[in-house]
Length: 270
Length: 283
Image (cartoon, rainbow over all chains, first blue to last red; front, side, top):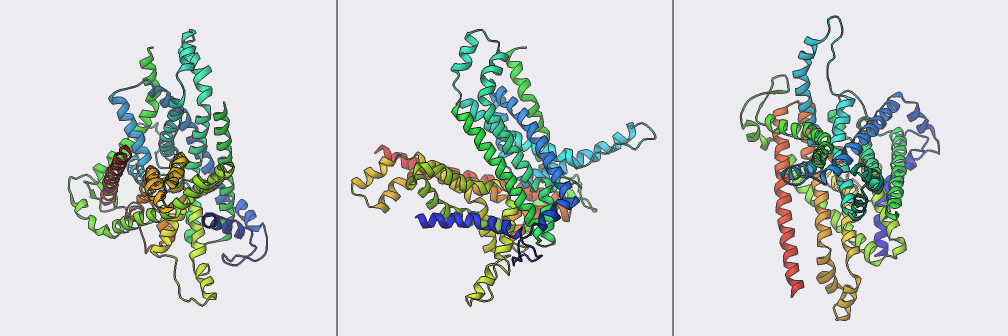
């Protein structure tokens, strides 16, 4: 059994190790290691397309994770007091958001937004002040942020709600009994207790958005995110530059993951 | 402002966001699936079932998805179960969490990069070259159903291990001792105690993996090389290459329907399985 488990771990980590190893290869070959070098890291960091894509990915991930954390937490808190059909409806939508394949979310967002933009753009042009280039809505960073926020918002609602349900009502009841106004109870009692869940939700959302390829592929318009860049480089052929980018990205996700774990654990101890 | 109004105000922004970015787009897909393709690509309004009648044109994609997704799920289950068992039942508690985290970590790194690693390994200069050294020649691994299955198992193994681990970890280990004290052989204990008690974990793991696989695009795109393609690949082709939005929407609606049906049937089955188990435990 032990040997079997060891095999599974080898299976899980060999591919990752191979990518990391070949990112340090000096040669162009993807199959032979030709001496140690940091050349491909230099290439990757000097490549304006890579840096542009990385910047876009970080920006989209940060903005959508922030929006999702705020809106998701608000909704999770508000939902506690809402019962009946409205609640059932909202819960159903949250589950749909999580269950529907990313690819369907991608195409649905693409055709819906393009259709809306096509309808709105002529109208915008007609009311636009004369002599100025009219604003034309198109797919790009805002639509990508909106789509990622939609999905990660649902994740945050699920995470924060689980934490809220795990809390005993006794603390907030005691606070109310001592005549603390609801907002104060929330700020002093509930919020500190759910902060770890909110932070975990943020980090999860950030990782999701940063790693997402399929939604961005449809929704990002002419903008490039890092996964889109990596996908198109793979299509053009495997180069050690992709290995270097991959290694950096995996390291980044690892750091975030450790961060999330630490935060969650601190929250549990409290 | 009453408490009630405040709650609604808190939920409203998220609700509006979900309506505009999820409910509206999904409704558009359903509406578009009854329309027609514009000559230049895109969509013109209509009410026809033509797109649905055309679905057999993409039968291969559905067939591949509906064979390789269950197959991949099953393979992941078979590989994941012994590991989850080892971690939950046989591992020193001091090491448990760390070893479990080690399984999960790869899942949180980009699936794109992890699948791409297999192009390396299964490609002509990877494993096949290694096999040639041992005298096995002419093995082709990349761009085959096998490659896609390996990619699937690799990509989703952590997601399968986790719920099974949780179920097995909750299992009262004294039950296993009781069973062997009563003279049951290890295999009997496993089949009559361990396996039934972990069925909820198996069910969750399989469902998570299966649902994600139904919409898979990257793994077949990278490891199937256009020869082994899923519905997801057909969708990318229809929306981004041939720009046939009406037909693409019908394919997407069909995908969701197939998913709903399989998941419902599956849940019923699981419910029945656990119901019979309860009867046994009452006896």
